[in-house]
Amino acid sequence: MARSTRRWRGVTPWLFLLAPLALLITFTYAPIVNMVAYSFTDWDGVSPELHYTGAENYAELFTRSELFEVFFVSGYYLVASVVQIVAALYFATVLSFNVRFRNFFKGVLFFPYLINGVAIGFVFLYFFQDGGTLDAILGLVGYDGDRAWLGTPTSANVSLAGVSVWRYMGLNFVLFLGAIQSIPGELYEAAEIDGANRWQQFRHIIAPGIRPVLSLSVILSVSGSLSVFEIPYIMTGGATGTETFVIQTVKLAFQFNKTGLASAAAVVLLLIILAVTWVQRRLVPDDKVDLV
Amino acid sequence: MTRRTVARALVYLSLVLATLVVFLPLAVVFLTSLKTSGEMADDSGALTLPDDPLNFSNYVTAFQDGRMLSAFANTAIILVVAIGGTILIGSMTAYAIDRFRFRFRKLILALFLVAALVPGVTTQVATFQIVNSVGMFDSLWAPIALYMGTDIVSIYIFLQFVRSIPVSLDESARLDGANAFTIYRKIIFPLLKPAIATVVIVKGINVYNDFYIPFLYMPSEDLGVISTSLFRFKGPFGAHWETISAGAILVIAPTLIVFLLLQRFIYNGFTRGATK
Image (cartoon, rainbow over all chains, first blue to last red; front, side):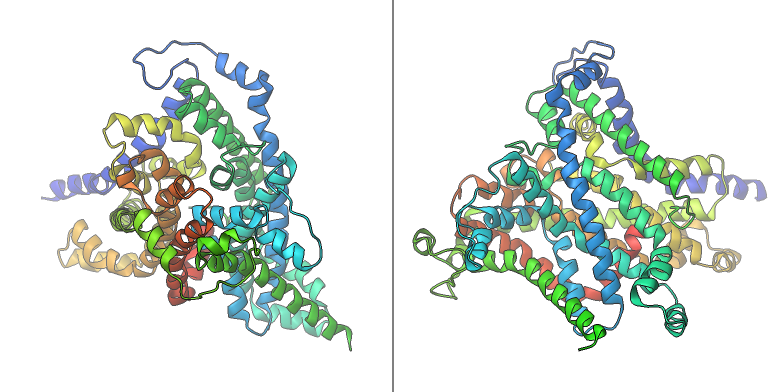
């Protein structure tokens, strides 16, 4: 009896873990292993034949400049995420103090994050249209002239990065707000008695208090900027220099059947994101962000 | 005027400006959705009001020609099954990892941890081959399995909660003769309600809004979810902005209603879901 219960106790956790582990391995680890393997072949994703080509795909990625240029597009989104984090910090700080209609403003700032990406794409496609929302608003303030906002690479990328700020600022905002509210209120009172102004309170109480969330946001922004897909794909399809790394990979794999090359690209992206994560953990070692 | 009142005025000014930035693009699309194609053609500008504010004919067109009914039905099926599965899988994993000491426990925990660092978009090229080879491509099962199997965040949320449930509860149940499954079902699972609410909200919004996975894995028109069905408006309705706008509003409206009803829980869900 005692032995059989002990044996049961040994098996029980595995019974609970059976389905989760099967899914984890099938949909996360097997793809990673396969992806690395494909990246050394010339596979087209369909034919039964695939040839080992060594590091050829990687060489192609780093030497064909047009394949590498997509990384510069990420730069626009990186700059945008700085704007996004600063704006979110500002609004979170302001709205954690007493402000009229606080809940209304909170709701307004957060709501865009909840909206469907395709709907946002269409809303802003109309916004930037020739004679669309933006031109009409500019006309109201006396700045006339229709402009093709998505017409040149620079203005198109700036516009798309702007949409991404509009869409994701609310998430940063709510995370910061939650973190600020978890700072004990006495700290502000004490600071107030000591004569600290709002900026000093922010600098010495809020900023250190929310450091874990801040560093989490930075890392999410960097990996987010590298893996932008939805907004540019929906709005421009990657035309006029707005193609991002993920759009290019999807096109390589599913339109041009270059599974091998696309896999190599995906491996590069994965390595960059893991490296960024690692560096960030090194720079800000904080047990509060630890997931376990 | 003191410096403090000036500062306050500037704060309110910035909040009002932000509100305009959020509202204007949405409001204009709403106005556009109420216009007729004639009004759209007369070049009166995007900011003019529609002649008939109760003109819902674009919504009818979008709903019927855009096949939005089947899109909402497909989305609902995926939502229910994927969220149900995520809850079961996440809570079982958390229970097994937190309450049992067994060989490879650390390793399994590490496997889930590392998986959280891998962004789904990067591995999709290879995931596609696996989904295809098990015959799930172009069926509702593909997104369901992917949403269920790759959601590591919910496992962490459950792990945090299971940890906060006192072990003495399990032990007293065990003394009463309950086995591990009874303990999970009767004690742990019911106590996980707050975590379940968080997962339902965060996951629900992600699934409702996801475009990438249904777009890659369910190309058939019959299998359109709201994202992909709306995306298809780009073709047939081309420059018919009044219909596209109506479609976009149809998709946004349920989110707005749910948000207004569940505001507080949604905020909590996101602060919990993202920082844990």
